[in-house]
Amino acid sequence: MYTILTILSASIMLLILTGLYLEFRPKVLATHNSVHIKRGLGLNFVLFSAGLVVMMFMGMQDVMAAAETAEGTREISTGLGLTLLGIGLPTGLATIGAGIAVSSVGAASLAVITEKPEMFGRTLVYLGLAEGIAIYGLVMSILLLGKI
Image (tube, rainbow, N blue to C red):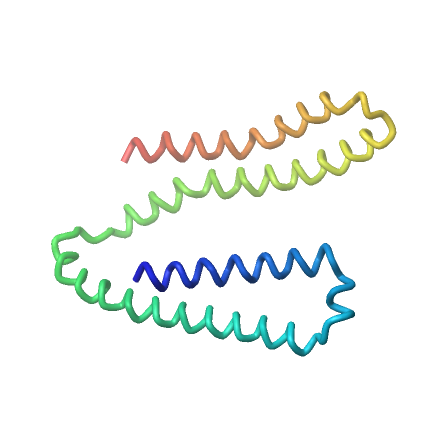
């Protein structure tokens, strides 16, 4: 299992490093035969996909064995499920609101910083206030989870 994880991690790292190398040295792509590069990336992708399939099949055995131990767990009722959805709702809505706020404030602060670089500190404070909305939603969800 650890051997496959090591191979998958190496494969991901090689894909990332190849992408970075080709990003910073685009002339290499033009001078080398692109067929070799495509074959290498294709082989890496196929090996990575095969590793994921093997990991899935190895994980299935663990899941099948865990079914015997899961018999003692309690089931979630409709009321508890709706409660959990209601608890997750503040985090989701606050995160969406924070994303909208950060997009507006971020665009405006970039425009201000290009004209007046000394305003960087103030715009960073405004951006932090907009991001605080998401943190408030997370805190509310944590407090509500404590009530269950």
